[in-house]
Amino acid sequence: AYAEVPCKVDQCTFANEPTIPYYFDHDCKMGMLGCMADGIHIGCRFCGRRPFDGVPCPASAAIPKGECWFRNEPDTQYYWDKNCTMGEVGCWADGIHAECRFCGGEPGSAFAAVPCP
Image (spheres, rainbow, N blue to C red):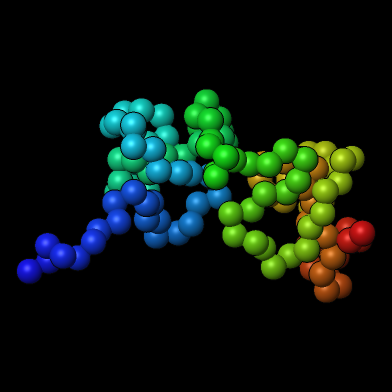
């Protein structure tokens, strides 16, 4: 009865979208680093970010260098601050690049003291 229903098997299915990049790798096997990232599909694979930085991301999932990267765009404003370092307010906004910095917001908010350019 369901023979004519097409199934998408080359996609990842997450209950909550991860912040780590991922892609579908048909060469994945159980036990390979990053494979079965969604806990459902063996071919769903994490890449490019610790502890999966040894798994290169294809261009479609690659994290850009020199700009912030978010899988899901945040509500908080952000910008690239080449002088941002660990421990400064707003730095590491994307969890990947030290230079990606949250800024602005209402007085009293977490990043209000960081002016947006």
